[in-house]
Image (spheres, rainbow, N blue to C red):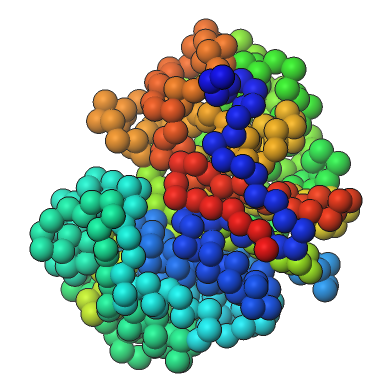
Length: 538
């Protein structure tokens, strides 16, 4: 009997089930590292750090020590759920009028903001963790030194970005050894990154943000025209914030406040909360239309809250979400002009046996970030600064000491004050769209977490994120070929430009989820078949 995408009667793999703890991540070795920490008595934050560090080695196009992170952590001891913003700022002396021709390059040194992820490992670990970085980073150091097997996903990322990687000698030495493209099954080593991880294990995050490693990062960036200084790195700290939340489906849906785009999921889920699953083609049309408006609001108003109001609290008022829903035309697509986006990110989630839950996203932004490796460190540097506007007076305009609006947005769903669903995805502008579809399939339609992750997806936008050159411009909805025919026909009939890709597309994100059944005392984990993912219980 063939797989039926309309009912998802056959998942791509079995749901992972456990009575104690669970880790779900986009690479099996990262999941295994997290589970090993749990097995040895560590908690969910400890496991998340270990898994994230391994991902920095095995998924180098998507995340790494040169990138940012956003966390949501539920601590059962305090019954508090806290968000942590580990995104970095531009150099303090940077300014719009210093950009050549007023243009902010998408790649290269000028697009690099301070990498925040490593500091968050220490800062969040100090608050919630029980193990030190010396222990937690050991598996990542070993993989960087001894080598890891290249997967199809990573080999494809290198092939797509080979021209950029060849242009940077430090990148080419790691990812194109001998000038050759890697194939799946080849062994990739990064001995400089192993030494960087070893230094952090010995000296903590300060070994990354000060001293020899920081000097090498700054030297690489200054050579490319950046105004980054040692002080910019040394003064970076993780910011503790309060998650945004809305009442939803008998519980609370949580997301990060700006500079994260997390509010987009809450806005869309709140607007469509009463639409349910009675008419699937209509729901998907309404979801696309809601996302169009949400992205438009983000692009016009979101910013680093230290530089101005974001208006996000008013945006999530029940009357505003109801007004958004009322404005949607159920039979006709509206026309918008979205900005192109390309994602290079990982999401992972962990729940431990005490009920601590972690939703963590970490990223270089675009694949291989700025296309620069800090010489002598093995660290790929992010290009998060590319998300700034260069329009004078815009809330998200490029400026010194400022965080750009970030697509990174890990959510969590609570019921009666405790996590019921820990989930998220990579995918740039597609993150809230993928999250919304997952919630619809899992909560509205009742599919288990694995079937909900398997279910065919769409993403609306101007799709520079695909590998098809004919899809580089123009507003459209891309869909996986498994999408039910009535949904595709319903979108086209209402005026959406729809393009069909393959059955399981990397462009549709790598999402993961853990569902907590407190009544029965079990966990259910799901891993995305579009990556090298694994959900594994303890």
